[in-house]
Image 1 (cartoon, helix red, strand yellow):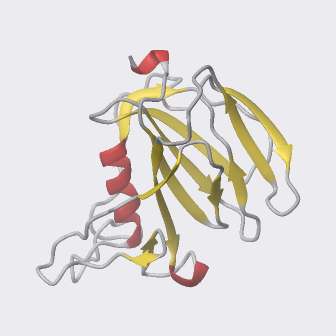
Image 2: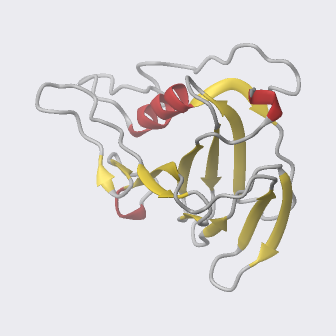
Length: 188
């Protein structure tokens, strides 16, 4: 929405302190939000792509041109406490929602390019430990994010997945997904 209204800058309320700090006030260890902000900064480029779909109000989707490389990065946010979603992405950005038996909705982008199944996308799934959205421990693809022994930010490694397979997003989680070589005219 901010992009539609030509917003140029967004400022977070606090880096340290208050209830919104990215770093713990006393230890300066990253709070869970830090990792989602870091992935946004590393993966989401300046070019914003419009996504319009009707469906569950618990699923949010945002698409940007990828940062520092060709392709598109999307962010999926599942606000549901109990429902997972399966998201299928294709490349011309026509969106269609359909119900699935176990997973509530499917988002599909139909496209022009046919993939032979060898190309991979990067997935970064963030969730609270044991599915607890209030957890002080953030998981990346099921692994706890903790500072290294030297106090450095851990490597944020993606899971590589077949580009045409559905994205499963668990309840109360977010997923950054990078599609290399995705053909979006706005990103050329």
